[in-house]
Image 1 (cartoon, one colour):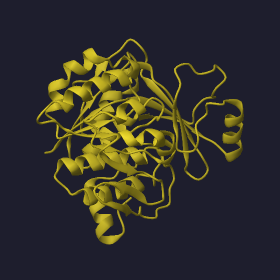
Image 2 (spheres, one colour; image 1 turned 180 degrees about the vertical axis):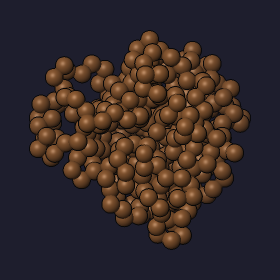
Image 3 (spheres, rainbow, N blue to C red; image 1 turned 180 degrees about the horizontal axis):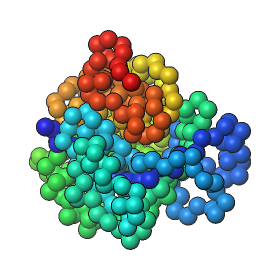
Image 4 (cartoon, rainbow, N blue to C red; image 1 turned 45 degrees about the vertical axis):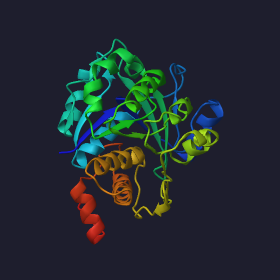
Length: 316
């Protein structure tokens, strides 16, 4: 099996279903509240920020992408940290059930990272992330995992963990003759500029909010740009420019759809698929994942995606 490693965030997602009026109120009250589809990272939330969530699920861009890669058929290892409460929330066990390797996940003194996921009436989402244990991912931890990272076919990165040790990792990987293909999801966009100039980054996959935020820094990036645009065409800027149209589905919750695309993209690239084929498969997978609530519950298998591409339908 192809070998994919995801180095990134592991969160507990607190889901809040909100009306358009409630979103407007949140944006009026908090200047930093995200735009539609945006992720904002806040270390300390106001005490009056949220009421009780409707439900609690598992998330984190790093973990979501690892699960997607495993569902896409890749042998996948998760690297990151959880808090002492990780067992209470079943973080490792849920990843194991999804086929993701967890033996190298570390434990930090801070609580497991938390994401408040606001789901609107049309399935759109707004994400507010409190890093928690994700902030404890440092150069010492990454150094311990270096051989695992270097031997991967593909490395998935996001921007929900500290930037400095990731930049150091990418600099070291750039000097390797045989290194993994690196797929970077610059979410949240704040602080991601430093990663764009790293030579080891091969694929950059912003959504439209992140693309606009990073546009002035994109000149430093020399790899393949994959613009995720929700229900609109994915735009790929490589040696040739092409677009891929997502299938029309009845979206219930778009949370994590971009993570699913990334995970399937990495698995397909690791398996030797062409860029166009990898993007097409990832785009279908991302769209199908929106038919169920939660960042992971709707992730299809590779067989599901193939069935949909062949017949236009998939069970469930």
